[in-house]
Length: 283
Image 1 (tube, helix red, strand yellow):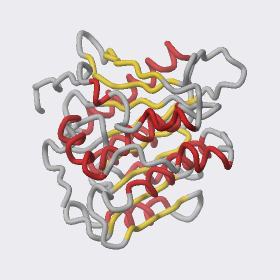
Image 2 (cartoon, rainbow, N blue to C red):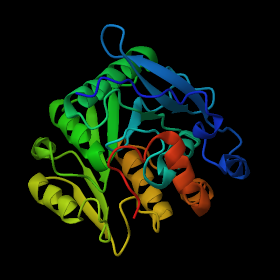
Image 3 (tube, rainbow, N blue to C red):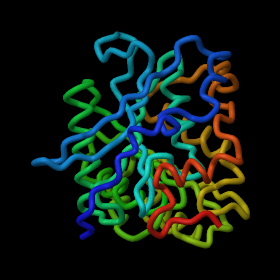
Image 4 (cartoon, rainbow, N blue to C red):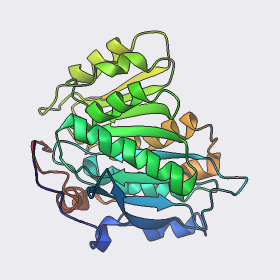
C-alpha cells in the first residue's frame, strides 16, 4: 500500500469553481458555494474534498433533496475529473433552483481499492451526520469505477445510482448487485488507456434486469475531451433522475448546457487537481 497522504489542494482557488463559473449568474442569481472538507477516516486519517452546496443550503428546507453526488477520479486521485468536468458538474448541479450537493472527493491512497472504498463510505457517513443526506449517486472515472461499484454493491439503501467514465473492470464485479438501481456507462472508442470494451463488459455484467445505459463516443479519448459538454449533461441528468429531481427545460440550456471549462484549460486543471498522476493519461 502507498503510505503517503495526498497533497492538500484546498488552498488552490482555481480548484474550487469551474473557470467560467460567473457565467451562471446570467442564468441563476443564487449560485453555489464551495466548502473545503477534510473528512475523518478512522483515527487521525483524513481525506480531502470539495463540497459544492446550493446557496443558503439547509438540510431542513422542505424543497431540498436529501441526496448528493460523490465524484471520484482515477488511479492518481485528484479532484477535477476527466477533462475537468467534475468542476463543471459540481457548479451546475448545486446552482439549480433545487440544487443538488456535489462532493468532489480525493483518495488517501490512490489506486488501492480497499482504502478508497473506506474513503467513500466515510464521506457518506460524514454527509449523513452533518448535512442529513442519506442518498448518494456515485460517479467514477477510470480506476474510480472500482470504489464506485464496490460501494454501490454494499450500500443498497444509500447508493441510488452509479455512473462511470472510461471505467476499468478490475475490482468492479459488485456491479452485479446493483440492479434494478440505474447505471450509466460512458466511454470513448479511441481510449488507449482502457478499452471501451471494459464498459461493454460492465454493461453485460449488470445484466438486463435493471436500468442500464452504455454511451460510446466514437474516436474520443480516455478523458472524453472531445465530448466533454455532452458527457457533463448526460451525467447531470442521470444524477438528477436518480435522486428524483426534474430539471426544468430552461435550466437545461441556461445552466447544464453552458461550457464552464474552456478546452485550453482542461489539461491544466487536471494537472493542478492531481488527476493526471499515476497511470492516468489523456491521449
